Image 1 (cartoon, one colour):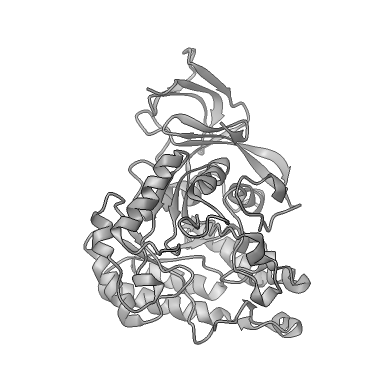
Image 2 (image 1 turned 90 degrees about the vertical axis):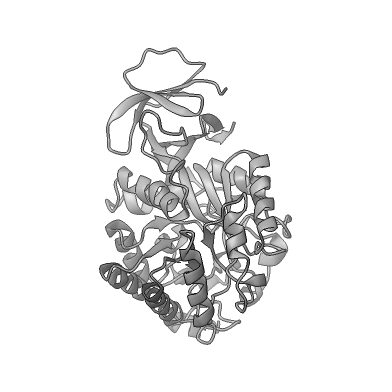
Length: 430
């Protein structure tokens, strides 16, 4: 039995204002309520959303517990308003067996702050050569439905075709890190263009992403299977995804918060905090990504939360690790970029940060649900007007590679409830 909670005067995604009673992990009443509960949360002026779901989280455990653990990453997720995250497979050892997937699942359950759903590797050891135990992972206690070699592209079209054919049998999806290795080689570290030439940095051309996206949507059509495009970063990729959807191909796509706001111009100072894969792109790509998220071409916002220990980031730019933090700041970035600019309303935020990612991940039985009587109480309460200056030192992540340090962002998570139990209250871990 969990304590009953009355959320007073919250504004739902559709703009209606109501009280919400939560009992035993479920929403039990809506309306103007005088019901006495064991805890009351005053929510006047606050937005109540379905709990956020992240399709793309690197928790680093097992293998790199100096950068993040399932527990610390779960803390960051809860503070960011998330009730479920998908833990990527590029750990050490790789999540390419049923046993490895179940281990991640169990670590998430032990942490108890968000539902941690393992992502299975597409290929053994992420080597791109032999399929991993896709069926065994799907049938395991972890019930893996999303498979990705993220960090590496499944570059062999025959392997990608076999993976798409295999996951179709149990309703799975392959999430692709779209990076042709012959066009964006091992030293490529920033967007290829005039600036990369000026800085003397090896370039990563947008076409290296776009050519894989185009190939994979055609393979998805050929196999009648599902493909998901991870961290879309270019206008060209947007056009391919838009075309594929118009053809009825079963493709979905995600965009990261950093690709919605940050541009390649930030690299002039050679700050490795801004080294990420795929790289930050020019403003014209950023504008295309925002428009695509607004019109539904891009389905979801996913953080690609990629914590790193200081000794992995504090190098010359070309030698530093790729990646940046994202879980604690994703909602404020989306509020600042999309809501304040009139590109999304709050129903749209709920769609791209909760309902769509839950559906893509196969978690929509419990997450991303409408706020209605009888639905699971996985909820996020947001102050939409709060102005917050990000301080990397205040992060609950183990790592500090935060690209938003000193940025002024709008929006703050006030409370997060996982099956009716508060994991965050008044903006801090409960």
